[in-house]
Image (cartoon, rainbow, N blue to C red; front, top):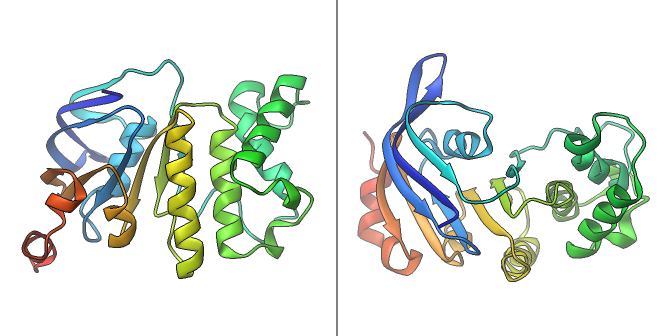
Length: 228
């Protein structure tokens, strides 16, 4: 088990969003967090990433390195005059600090991340010149440059066309094969169904956990998405 969560409550400014949630995330799997807006998916990702502190409960990581977290819209705006490579290099800031000169091992980590997501040929392109799928791959490469074995993604397929969504699903499968555990929040049920496991959330509570084929049935989804 890569992550164990037990009776965990968390939120913002003392206001709970997650309520007594218990779940497990297996190592070397893709786990989809599924639920309507306000169900707590992004909050759970924030807790897993360490940017939101639990109010109560237990969170245990089995890995030795901090998770890599790719927020929904990324921390870099399209308008900033950054190249793809410069954006991915920001993933090394945790090791070197902002704006410090990269060492050989840092550059090697950036090169590897660019190759892994198939955008090495775009390294000199400006962010604003990229398609939605290329931009998402750049942000994932930034996460991979942190060299963590746990990658957390918030809505990685939002705004992508069907072909780009399919390439993203293939990429996530390849990352797991390369030794990375992937957790992603998604509204895309096709993306969720291609995951190895699924956590189904409603109003900050876990209402189901298991294989997507068994969990994401029409009757279950209708109950989760019905008005409060």
